[in-house]
Length: 256
Image 1 (tube, helix red, strand yellow):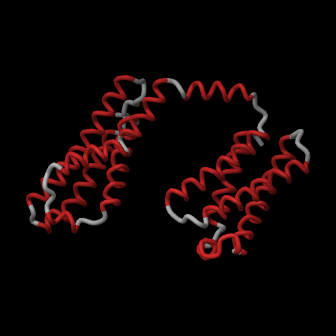
Image 2 (cartoon, helix red, strand yellow):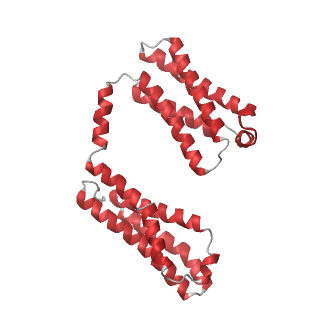
């Protein structure tokens, strides 16, 4: 079993145990009872058993210098860390803490993999240097700009326009905010991949969904308000994409 297979196996075990082998009732019990929840410990035992099975298989296939006791200890480390992270998360059941919870689990998995992988740690420094190249930093900056800063800018422009009364019936502002971010990130990704027809599909799909609301409202001011927001979102994404493609080698020509 190669080093990359080991890493993928550890991540696969995490996904299976955390999402497929953990009933919703266990999650609800954990949120209600926290560290006193018995299902929380059952869940950690599942992680321990699956990781132990994978690591023992890796041990026998890789002729590793690590001892069997060491393999058992690493499986136990993953299970105990998972238990402690889940206990902390049980007090904070929202999206931010869910993401943090998953990142912490993956960090533990990465550390375990690095302790077992047969690699020169200097290669990690080289990889870090590659990721800190200007083009990758610009790519990260482009995606970040299209998230919160662009949303703030669009919001400031729209606040200078008197919002139609009908906008109060258009659903959750938070949902609209997230939809806008997802739309801009998706469009930039499609442009960088050279999938310009996909960009057209995203714009068309949003237009179709908006059409029913605008048709039923019969409100010209609402139509102009929504159209302006959409054009600003799309225009900012195009501007960022043009600048990024002009400054970096990213971008793939679409196939004929």
